[in-house]
Amino acid sequence: MRLDKYLADMNVGTRKELKKMIRSGNVTVGGSVCKDPAFSVNVPDEVCVMGKPVRYAGYEYYMLNKPAGVISASEDPKQATVMDLFENVRRKDLFPVGRLDKDTVGLLLITNDGELAHRLLSPKNHVDKVYTAVVRGIVTEREITAFRDGLAVDDSLTALPAVLEILDTDPALGQSRVNITIREGKFHQIKRMFAAVGMEVLYLKRLSMGSLKLDETLEEGAVRPLRDDEISALKNGCGL
Ligand code: URA
Image (cartoon, rainbow, N blue to C red; front, side):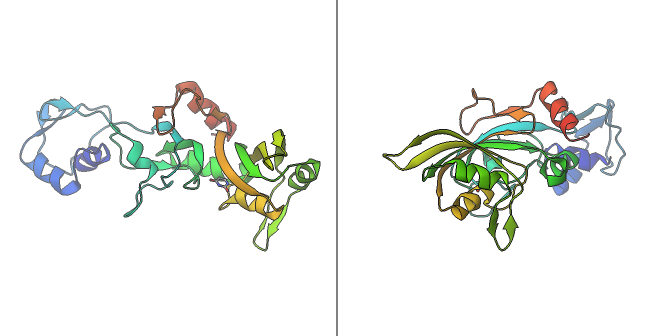
């Protein structure tokens, strides 16, 4: 990998700044000053900028407990994104795996591993996503059956079979608390499924994606790196 790309990937500066920094002799590779931005670095080589080592991190995996009010995008000119919640993370090629609506909270995987992201999101890999929701309306066996049988949501969406579980219902308030497991992630999928049975989602939180469970000790807005066992279980679960 080119020296300037290595340093740009690690967010040390822009390509332009880095070329200048390298040409001015501030960067060493394997202990010797290297003034060539195109120099080919082997990732085990020790690269230092002004004497400080900059280690190359390959793939990175983080769990975010997404709060309401931020969008699931890598960048946006107007609105706060989930990436604004990352501090002290060097890589700039991280992205959220799939989208949660602005008002949805809970588990969001953030990585730069495009292959894993693709596999987790592809319906053909049957990766279950479990959500908990509060809906306006009293959920009964009728909705459980309709969701299980693959609901015709609208002209553009017939949902794959989904598992709906009633946690409790409050007839006085006219609300239900449910868990719902889906295998796909179409735009506003769960909200549209409930709308199709005449109910409104008032609160939505993602609890898990495949084997990866939201760490309940993680406060809304907080991020932590995935543990090695979480990474391997996620990869195994989708054939990687
Ligand atoms: N379904 C929705 O409607 N919204 C989400 O954020 C996720 C699933």
